[in-house]
Amino acid sequence: MKIKAIPTLVLSLVAMPVIAIAFLTWRGSFETKELKNYGEVTPFKLTERSGKEVSLETLRGKVWVANFIFTSCTSQCPLIMMEAQKVSKALLFKDNFRMVSITIDPMTDSPERLTKYAIEWKADPFKWLFLTGTFGDIKALMHDGLKVPTEVEGVELMHSSKLVLVDHLSRIRGYYDAEDSRQMKKLLRDSKDLLKKAF
Image 1: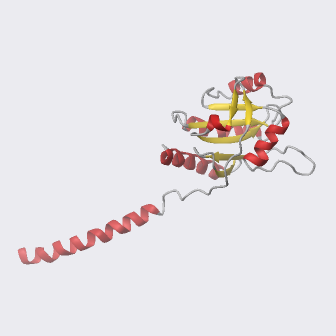
Image 2: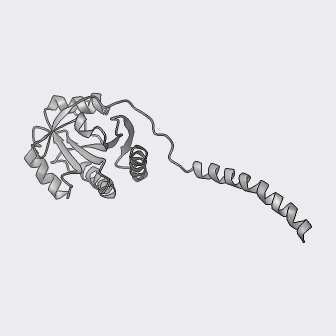
């Protein structure tokens, strides 16, 4: 019995590293791939629904997701807000995460109007920011800062269904379409991954 046991033990010792390597390779294929870097967000200053100024420095050190809405919108905005709400709720207890909704109709969407809109969506006032400002500042943030198309067929400030993921170093790491459920799931996964790696 002892003579037969020795080859078996040797085979087991040889096989274990092979199995371990195969397992790690298999597991690695399912891990999140390194996200692209689309460049840094350029500096900006806008007004939050609370009346406080919010700048790029305010959000530096945070992972955040930007989206574009206006309070009188009845087409894409409800879907965008619903998807943003899901992500915000899933990451509610992550201190270093912020959801950032930016109006593209600053003439109408005053801080007071945005406050009412935020309450309707049960947005946490500390974790979900609603920003307004001058038309020029918002366009600059969209086009230059977040690199989102702003003009099409004569429309100077185009609405976008894209949500933009920004990491703690203010680098743009992804664009996700609110109308695609698979992309929304990926947004949540990628947000969690950035939070895990940074903090």
